[in-house]
Image (cartoon, rainbow, N blue to C red; front, side, top):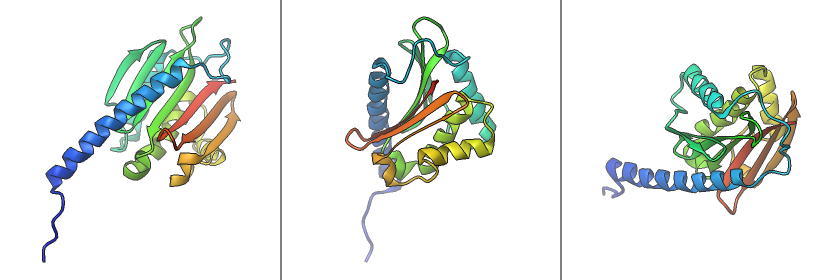
Length: 190
């Protein structure tokens, strides 16, 4: 007996709808969380790059990996910064300080569905944040940071996990918010 299920066309259409919905949810979450100042972010500390330069770093890093896991889907200006969509379920944002043009906060926001549909992309996105914020980190240092944050293995535990680690005057903070269905990795200068 032949089992009936969704055709490939139906699956693609269904996934596309969920992908669009996920992007909308993440966009609202990123814009909302960027608009709310973090207690850890001090106005006098910034990175040595602007939001536009951060976008260039991201673009170069994505091209350098020569991977099909991440891409630049869309990039746009947001209030005091730049937002870059790197997958159906993930957005990067760079917030510039109000008194300078340099970036004071970099944040990756990922929908929790990326734990199911885009595990490799999520792992690469974590690595991408480290690579673009602090270009001096060696490969082994990047993996050590991910290990310290509890992000070296992708699992459902990340939905309800929190971690913090500082290296080279950059503080990395990860929080999974199971209620919001989102995960955040942010980097701030210390």
